[in-house]
Amino acid sequence: MEVGKRVEEEAGPSSAGKIDELRGEKLPQTASGKQSEESEVGDEEVDDKEGFTPGPLLSLKEQIDKDKDDESLRRWKEKLLGCLESDLSEQREPEVKFHSIGIISDEFGEIITPLPVNENQGGRVLFTLREGSRYQLRLTFTVMHNIVSGLSYSNKVWRGGLLVDRTQGMLGTFAPQREQYVETLEEETTPSGVLARGNYSAKLKFEDDDNRCYMELPYSFEIKKGS
Image 1 (spheres, one colour):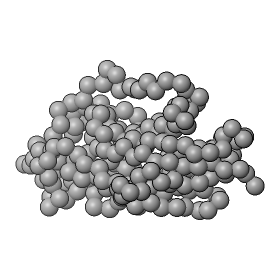
Image 2 (tube, one colour):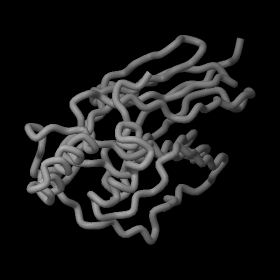
Image 3 (tube, rainbow, N blue to C red):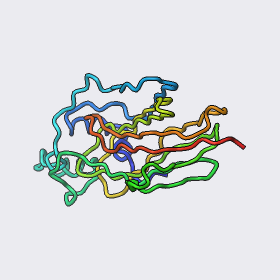
Image 4 (cartoon, rainbow, N blue to C red):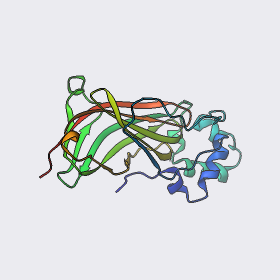
């Protein structure tokens, strides 16, 4: 169950257009979507944001103060943005702080790893799964200072230096709030067969519509023989 709510869920189905007005830009569709490219040899970046031009970035305080003489509109904006006057920041750049990453599987429930990962643990195997297992990654994070528009992720997997899988998806748009957000990524299935067993390296990346990168997490995992 999610602790926080996306901007769209907090303010209702018509809020996406209202946030467009606040930020002065057109936001992309925020429904979750995933693309997967398996057995790739190359490692070319796919830019789905080509041609997208973001509007001017305003701090939360500037967005609220634009209608400071209209008390009802001001309170409406504060409710929509999920903040109180005491929380308003003049910092224009949003910040996303990731607190933990979890791996969810029917084999063992959920294994949670605090973030950031210690340097001496960066190369360790984050989790081990049996071949043909279904699993999901779950992130907890906090949004601060400003609205994060179009937070998306990409997850690349290598074996022996060869890129073997790449997935990407959209999480949505998030307003600053004191409570942590909890987001579960799309379900994945490990490959099966003798050749699929072994160790893999991966990199999980999060960025927004303005190409701000909030986290790049390298990790490793192992696929072992099924029972």
